[in-house]
Image (cartoon, rainbow, N blue to C red; front, side):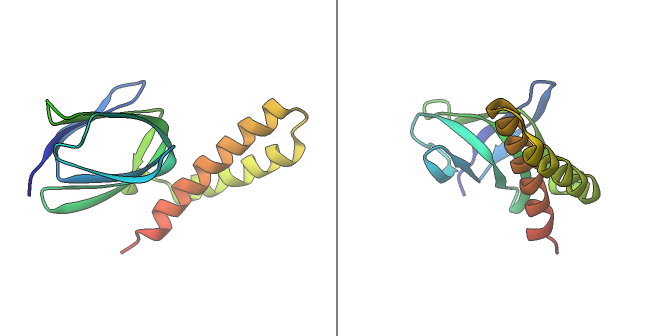
Length: 137
């Protein structure tokens, strides 16, 4: 199968760089799958799961939003995200605690800004929980 160069970058570091066969994630366009030589594209990445295949192995991650950039000529994809956690990195206990905290913040929000911030925290926690539970062996 054809591959493309994938770079995953966070504000803190270059998380990973390798050849991938495909990746699937949610953008503002909806769920998309990227293969080698994808058309040029820039898309907002939603808080969502990331599924990717490399070396005939499928891996699962939780994304906290960001930007996806596909460069057809270079056969390269850059995923610039606020945060990313692999299935193995997700601490389910911590994620459940963060979900409860976010729900309390949501209920007690006193402004639209506080409500929106709590809603984002809740989405991130639910996404982490979902990735961990959905892809258990």
